[in-house]
Image (cartoon, rainbow, N blue to C red):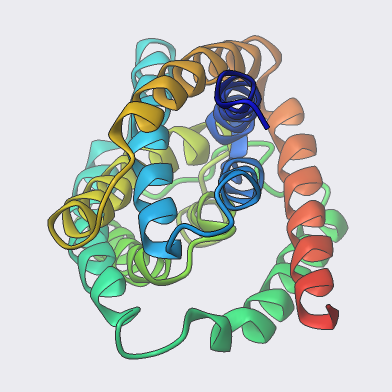
Length: 255
């Protein structure tokens, strides 16, 4: 494929990745396979690093867009982000010692459980039932950030979905507030993973810059749509993305 056409295709993929990621996470479902298809002979670590460099711009933009319209629960987001930063760094380091694919069957089961639970509980995340700010809430958020942050640095698929579900289930947030909080943590995990990768592997910076701009445009579009249509729309997108993740992981296991 001609290099200019290749960049156009990857730019389009980055736009849709940013769009989906801004609403419920899961942009890696689009962006990572596109990179692997375009550069089959490039080392996976380089492609993962390039993906992080492209997606962190869109994720940060989505977080800013949400922050202008939705009150961020900083008592949960801040400790969660710090813990996620640490977890993602060590998760990225762990890739050198353990193949990430060993997690695939477990992640598939967890995603199925999340999808079934969310589908059965029609009221889940429709209204906020958050507890008052306190050490307990901050501690739970930090625990979520540490575990999911490690997972994002180590493996990654479904990170945004897991964060949203856990913030709703464990902290009583609605889908919209859970989504904006997840974006704050996602910025931290992307930053940590990118920092580790950029120090240890090659990053395709020119391609990453192009994809970052397209990802940014998608993220702005997606976050505005989520804010316009509210929690019901985010819930539907959440179930859609989790379903696609389940299909993708099942296909990878059986292939």
